[in-house]
Image (spheres, rainbow, N blue to C red):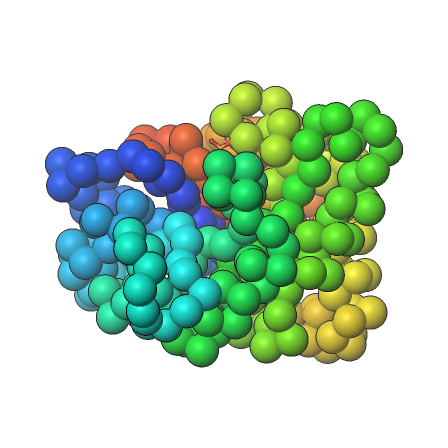
Length: 247
Ligand code: PEP
């Protein structure tokens, strides 16, 4: 049985003042029936991890370097994130694939580094609007999945997030049938590569304009094990009902 996961991605948002949102989130969900993860900017990981240490709230990061240490000015390694208190890291988000020209091969190298540092890798895959309109969605997903997932991936250390690029921050969401089609495809691809039992254990998140209003319909779909939430994870007022919908 896969435990559901509500993961929040704060992106490049948040200062010390935002930690009050985490306090409110912890207070609102003292004994959650699902896993709750917040990935704040790297500047807040130490404080966030300290604040949530005695609570079920887990803290993650938004990226890591593929190397454990070295001459990489401005970068942060997976062991550093673990040392700061992170238990997971988002990898291959479409904003990093676009803004930093990250390839699936690089994402796989980062995931290998994350696994070596005992971090859960949340690996993002998803098509652009042009790719969907050209009926290339499943081809793109297959490429992302095949090349972004290292052989070290297991149900315990890897989560896949399906995030159609055109749904991120736009208020647009795929239809339930479109989400189901991709999640079914992801499960089949994972089964072909890792075998039925490991593949059954890997959690599949949907991400892209998840809000309190659409969360129940999305979470009712088979093979949707939770959500990766951007904008709506910034405040407890919006994120809390999404968690409740998942429970
Ligand atoms: C995201 O960036 O991972 C995301 C899903 O953003 P939003 O929920 O704001 O669409």
